[in-house]
Amino acid sequence: MKFLKQLLPRKLKVILKKIFWFGNSYYCNVCRSHLRLLHPSGVKSNLFAELEIIGGGYSQHDNCPVCLSGKRQRLLFMYLEKTGVFTKKNYHVLHIAPEEAFTHVFQSCADIDYTCGDIDTERYPFCRNIAYVNLTEMPFADERFDLIIVSHVLEHIPDDAKALREIYRVLKPGGDAILQVPISWKTEKTFENFTITSEAEREKIFGQKDHVRIYGADYTERIKQAGFHLKLVDASELKNHLRNNKILVDDREKIIVGHKQQPL
Ligand SMILES: [Zn+2]
Image (cartoon, rainbow, N blue to C red; front, top):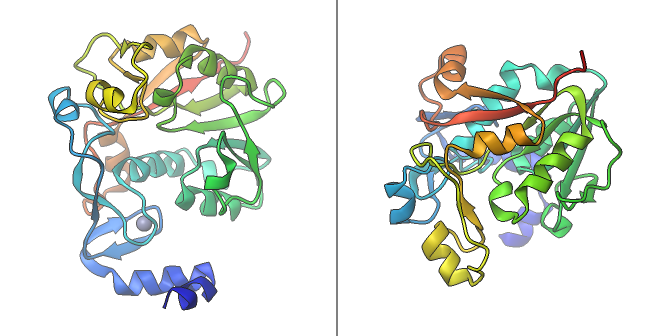
C-alpha cells in the first residue's frame, strides 16, 4: 500500500483524499475541499491556555486532512487571496519555512518569481528551488522581494531584531512582510531568557521545546524598530470578505504585516 502511494502522482493523491474526506462539516479554502472532519493538532500546554497564546497550543479541530493546513494557514490564505497576491505579475516572493499547501499554489503561478528558504533545506522536498537561508544573514541583495512570508519562525530565533532588520533589508520599498508568531496580546511584555537552553526547560517556560521566547503585545514595537510600518488585519475582516462559516479559523488571530514604505 505504501509503495502504491509513492507511485501515485500528487494531483491524483489529492483527488483521492478529497473524495475520502468529503463531507459537509468544514471547508478548506487553501485546497478547496469540502470536509467531514478536521484533525486535532498541537501540544496540550496549560501555559498556552493561561496566557491565551494565539497560534499555539492544542486544537481539537484544526488540520485539513487533504492539505494539512490548520486554522492559521487558512486565515493567512484568506489574506493572500484578498490582497490578490496569486494574480500578481512580475512579483517576487520569499517564503521562509514554507507551508507545503501554499508552495504548490505559488509554484503554479507562472507570473510569480517564488523562492522558498530555510535553514534546514532537507525538510522541503516539495519546493522546486529551496535556498539555504539563515534569517539573520540572508543571501539576497537589498530590496529584492515584493512579499516575504515568515510565519511562526521568529519565536525560534534568539536575535529576532537582527532577523527583522534583514527581512526589512531584502524587502522592496512598498513591499510587505507577513510576520506571524504565537502571541499573547494580553501579556504586555515579551518574555525571553537566553540562559534557558535545555529542551525540557524551554518547554516548561516557553510552552514548546524549540521556542526561545513568548511574544507579548510589545512584539509590534520590535517590528517598528526594524523600520516597518505596522498593519494588523483582524480575522473578522477576512472572514466577512469570504462569507463562508465552514472555514474554521481562530477568530482572535490577526495577520501581522510589516510594510516597507516608499521613500517620500
Ligand atoms: Zn486543505
